[in-house]
Length: 137
Image 1 (cartoon, helix red, strand yellow):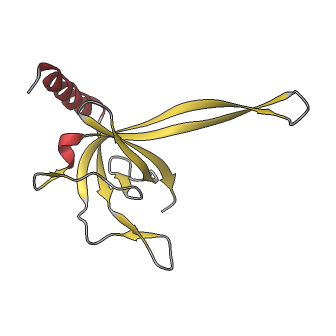
Image 2 (cartoon, rainbow, N blue to C red):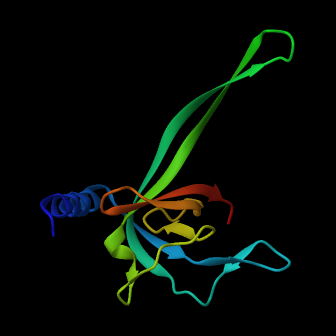
């Protein structure tokens, strides 16, 4: 393994040990007549994840047609992510990424809302970044 890859993996393991929390990935599927249901064809998985809420301010500018004026709007919100070591996502030797719509349950925070995955992408190192939204149980 290359030096940088080993260093990234070591840093990832240390970060999980200090800041990580126990999570469970709950596979979901779209129900026929209702919302999402647990996908019983895929197993639940326990992982250590890093959950973060990053405040975001977005500025939107809209030009009124023919008026030559700009109107600005500001949107405040949070970007919610869960970061997981890629090595924790192997099942029987095969990389099995969580799917869009799957949910995280934060086991260390039993009253926290579940987090639904909206996208999954590698961070360029040893982790996968899952963008999530909070859902009602």
